[in-house]
Length: 191
Figure 1: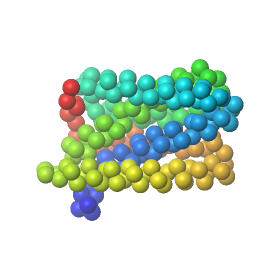
Figure 2: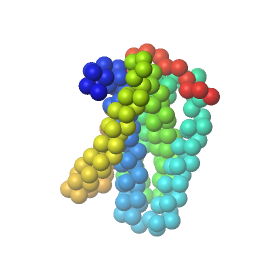
Figure 3: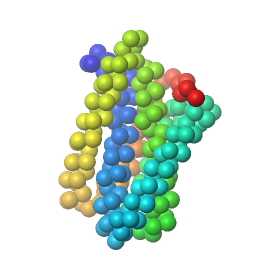
């Protein structure tokens, strides 16, 4: 594993995958808390989460077309920057329609993250070692599932919910930047 992690391009992709998972986890964990804090009912919070899920479906359905036209790296980078921008607006909005629109946009942005980072990690795996790379990727992603919500919860208990959305924006912006630094063009996923 350490030998694989010493490869700079592969390491960037694995870190990027973990960042995308962090963005997804923070959204799924903090949207219901934020919705409750502004007085939304459970059904409205569920509707907003459903809109997010629908957007991820739309994005994943659109990925073959988008990656063929713009490259996987560009689609992921632009999506992460767009997601970061939407997260910056989130704590200032309490209208259900605007929250729904933001949620749809965030779903589009985050919906491409896992498929593209999986493709990128596979493409940068040394021959015959793609299974190991996938295992490392899953281990890092699951580590982020544990660490990020707990850390964000500690910060939110001290500073409130808004900084969590700002941190998430920073995570996604860094992910977009990191994607831009990954060298090489990537083939589109199979249609």
